Image (cartoon, rainbow over all chains, first blue to last red):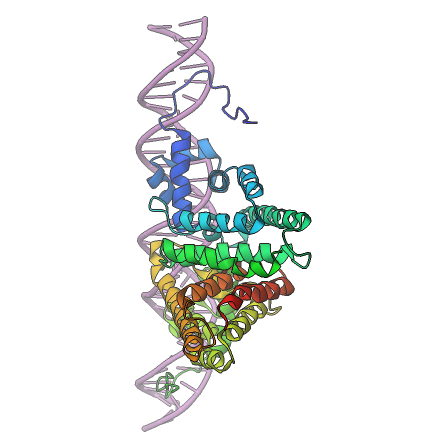
Amino acid sequence: MKLADTPPRKTGRPLSFDREDVLEKAMLAFWKSGYETTSISDLTATMGVTAPSLYAAFGNKQQLFLEAMRRYAGDRTAMETAMMDAPTAREAVTKMLRGAAVLYTGEATPPGCLLASAAATGSPEAAAVREAIAAERREVREIIIRRIETDIEKGLMSSDTCPRTLADLTLAVTQGMSVLARDGADRDSLLAIADAATLGWSIYEI
Amino acid sequence: MKLADTPPRKTGRPLSFDREDVLEKAMLAFWKSGYETTSISDLTATMGVTAPSLYAAFGNKQQLFLEAMRRYAGDRTAMETAMMDAPTAREAVTKMLRGAAVLYTGEATPPGCLLASAAATGSPEAAAVREAIAAERREVREIIIRRIETDIEKGLMSSDTCPRTLADLTLAVTQGMSVLARDGADRDSLLAIADAATLGWSIYEI
DNA sequence: AGTATTTCATAGTGATTGATACGAAATGTA
DNA sequence: TACATTTCGTATCAATCACTATGAAATACT
């Protein structure tokens, strides 16, 4: 499934940097300061790459962000199978929320969620970036919805359950945890939120 | 309690605009596009005021935002008394969440929450603005915590209840609803989230 | 070595950023 | 009417924005 996105480089001066390495640094820069508020000079400074090299390697700022975002979001199918493998939807969601709590309070990464922080607002020029992030969220939402529907079909949850609402609530808690992490909330606080978020699900359990 | 912040204007050319009116427009501009990503020329265009007049009336961009933010946040004590007047903490929080759902999906205002959107990220220069917003959130958090503690003292909620966690969860849901509203979620979806957010509180009720 | 190819660093593009200098215009007071 | 005071519009400031033109440097192939 991995495409050979390395072009046929036959000759010429070799790259003086590792593409994945500087992409990682760019991701961290965007994670820390957002999309529009991270300037090219910020990026070149933290990536250790001059502007012309950056543009030659990644196209432009938006394409660089989208690549960084894909690297951040990781393999969507991996998360999907993990959620489907959990014994119940509630456990799957709790696991996901606790994973977010840990990710948002990592010591080696900026606080919060890259996607939640990067483009909360912005000028019309950045609408494409916001839409890409929103699409990512919609995918996660669909995964959660399907997982809850699975439990309903299995008879584990009441047919009165509204999968959309519980999925939206889960997404809202996730995004909110990112905000609190940026405000300085510690890991234990976020884990407590993750556990408390699904307490209400008990009334739907059979 | 209202201070006379109008300086002793005795003579000179009169102001050609209503200060509160243009402040309202500035608030909407920040609400729509955030703090750093709303430029002075954006502001002068929507406010109908030239740059020198803007700086004469409000100081600089940061002070203008802080004034707009205070106007948005409104009177904090009013919210506090409203929450204390509600029969139970759970009803108070649900009311607050539903109020947020309505506010974030208003037709005359941009989607989402001004405070949640304006400074999710940003350059180090905007740290003061982010801190002001974070302080606002901490105040709301304390109000919620005190309201829950009141219920515990009254014997309406179990002493096992962790007021901090429930307050953090409430804040997280609020901020998350703002993100979903920006993604296009409609009012009914957000109201459903607001109602679902406190379902888990039932296990603490006596 | 000579050549083709690719990346490198330097230096700069026009546009936009937040913020002002300046003099004309509009008021109250004398 | 004359003056003090304040705000007005115009025109602009240095700094930064995303981005690139240009030629030297470094490789592979002949």
